[in-house]
Amino acid sequence: MADKSAAVIRSPISVAPMMDWTDRHCRYFMRLLSPSAFLYTEMVTAAAIHHGDADRFLKFNSAEHPLALQLGGSNPDWMASATAKANQYGYDEVNINVGCPSDKVQSGQFGACLMARPDTVAECYRAMQGETDIPITVKTRIGIDDKDSYEFLQTFVDSMVEAGCEKFVVHARIAILEGLSPKENRTVPPLNYERVYRLKRDYPELEIVINGGLAKIHQVDEVLQTVDGAMIGRQAYHQPYFLAELEHHFDPSGILPERREIVMQMLPYVESVLRDGEPLGRVTRHMLGLYAGQPGARAWRRHISENAHRKGAGTGVLVDALAALPAAECESRDDHEKNAKR
Ligand SMILES: Cc1cc2nc3c(=O)[nH]c(=O)nc-3n(C[C@H](O)[C@H](O)[C@H](O)COP(=O)(O)O)c2cc1C
Image (cartoon, rainbow, N blue to C red; front, side, top):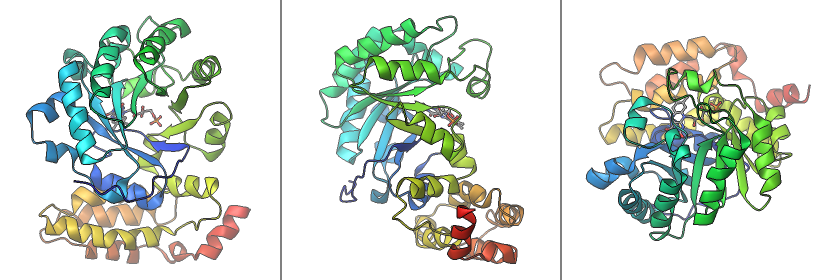
């Protein structure tokens, strides 16, 4: 059972649920970069929790708080029983996935296709509420296929509000359920922040978190002028140091850690993962982007990629990867702060 002692600080930033990416090792790493961002698990299907080994899907490190479990499903009984389990494990929020467009998800009748079935999602919501006092929230798109209108989004939101939902994460593009891959569905339909802003203006009492295409601090600042939160997906994964910069931007009283310090702080965690019998690469694969955009980026990635899979690989791979960085990467925090002010 997770210990909830870690302080749960409110931050306007959250990191998106991303299948195969935001597993618990990734989240531990991200937590070091950003002490306060709200983290989301990968989507877990309610069926997997209901029928399977709950520990495998739900276990996490207490340092990961605040943390939401994202659930996929449309069977109210299974969604309720998965929520009861999430409650036992100590999650801070349960989020319903109404945004994923993949075929696999549609055949299971959940994800983005559920935007067209608000009654089903509301029924799940009510069943889930009976199992916990923690917030149950929804992550959705702004529309699906030809249902690309504010009114369609509003009908969905109204139904969820009636069921009791107070927080919506909105990926600001429609999902195209036929003909586009999940990857294309994150780039091809155009972003439409205005529709999300309108939702916030019409429902000021709701907590609205916007998602999609946020990769720069000034963009995050801009969206936060209208909505309550900003969820970052790919940029947080490909350039995880962005999370540290965002944290520092919103709390300049804190210290912006050096990348090297983050690596050193990861070492005890990596040791514990290795003791549990997991291979090094399960953790280090999430750390490859740490130096993205820096002079040592390629040396860092290469050293880890070439060595993490070797038999007996341990924390020395990370230490050696640091040593492989060019001298310029050993800049002090003072240098960094001077650069940031320029
Ligand atoms: C590899 C990957 C996996 C994803 N898996 C999920 C998921 O499990 N649940 C979900 O709601 N969205 C998922 N998404 C979508 C993201 O949560 C987010 O909505 C999308 O990437 C847009 O945000 P971004 O432009 O900041 O990346 C995934 C995205 C990526 C790149």
